[in-house]
Length: 223
Image (cartoon, rainbow, N blue to C red; front, top):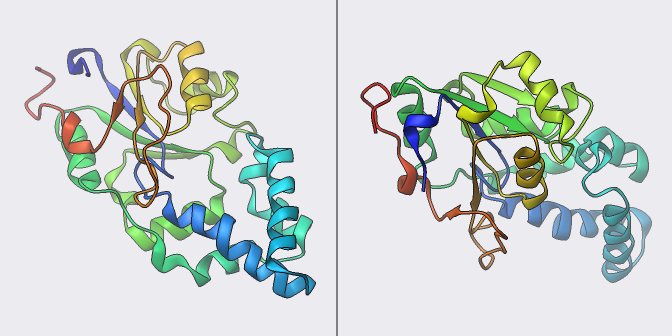
């Protein structure tokens, strides 16, 4: 599935890839509608319908990922609301072992997320994963989401990776296609980003069920 002899850098998505997407799905699809219904004094069904329409309007843009945008749009402190259900934040199995193995093999393990800085901080505080990366990058710092093929060139100014010698693991097909267009050498999707949901469509990409399936060699860079 992976040619480790042709990988110097491993770029990793956060939500749905390293972390269970159940937290995010529950927050945006269940918790937010309930709290919005309470605030607006409308039915749960009406709140959910309005929010789904708002979500679709900005999906895939920086606004979709921006907690400040949603706080301003909805008149709610989204970061505080996330803390109400942060006990649901969970790391997928074997993630820490994989990250440490990547670094022990002499390669760089780099987190690259579209998540807003406040969400990123909440999740790193909860999971204690930050110390397992060589670098952490938030798309908000670059002003464009990973779905934009130009994102990867901007990322290279901060993390000088060689695209042909890079692996990206992400659960988003639009992100993987963007990275493919930008020349990222090896791409993997994730079969089940949300542990409580069915397998997702992984399109034309190879996909993993767990990180134990793709452990790198730990002695230098020999396969």
